[in-house]
Image (cartoon, rainbow, N blue to C red; front, top):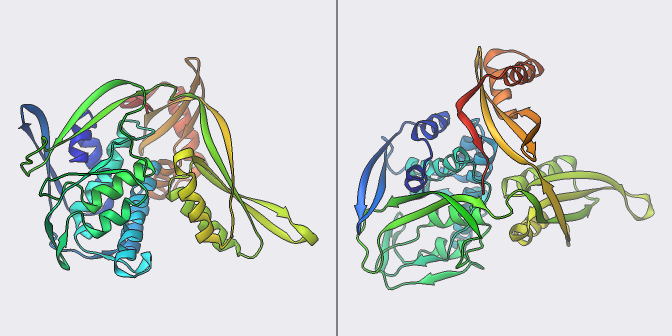
Length: 386
């Protein structure tokens, strides 16, 4: 329903399908118009040959991470599955890496999460907000047998988040949906959306008939008030003197995957001249506590410092340029309506370098030249919005 709503709101189906093909999995997206309680909506079906596929979190992370998807879509998708693995692990008494997904390991669930994150990217969505998720009642059949609604993994995922319990005898929030929304919002579900100027609205239709509400998921895409300019963020820091470089590198990667805006290492000297590293992460205020806990788990540090910091940002948009050997996206920054920087997307440039055998600097140079010569392709020209 999330992907259907984003497509209904204007995410180009052909662009989403093209990115999903990079996963190397067989599928077909089928959409058809629907009317739910008089509301014009879009219903989506994912057709594929797989039945009851089982995959571990490691399998899914490798699949998504190696597909060459847009960087932010990759980060958001892996973050959702990481949350799901942690929740399933707590329910079954297993570490996240050893969790084997059943229903959510099936191809359609992978395409639901990755497709939604890709659709957000095509729409240029920077931030996502969501109201408290509805918890139904009754039971649902699963690989382990009948389970109560809401499911154990769903409740585990939503610990610390606001939810609303309903008398609807349906599973109104699945573990997959809960993981996706928790990942995109940092687990903060509020009654009111942020002040914004709506630009597009989409409705994703469900199949079940609900008694107390229309079975649609509504998406509103718009420009958040104050989306560009000054931001209130959190800076996380921890001094670590007993971890190897490989572990620290993995820690910064995990922080980025979990939603940190940036993560880095700084060499420092501690008391008695001991060499060490300061692990740093820049985070949205809503994500600071979760990322601080992740930093402790990944490095073994017993405490994380937190500072509120400001950040001034430029307006950004993405354009695509057509090169003789493929397309490459360019991130363009502007201040007061004037462009001042254009940088090729590393993911696209590195993919083209692998495919053609050309040096990466050559790809960068060709992409910049194509942009400067005014050859962006119209479908890729979009502004990043909140």
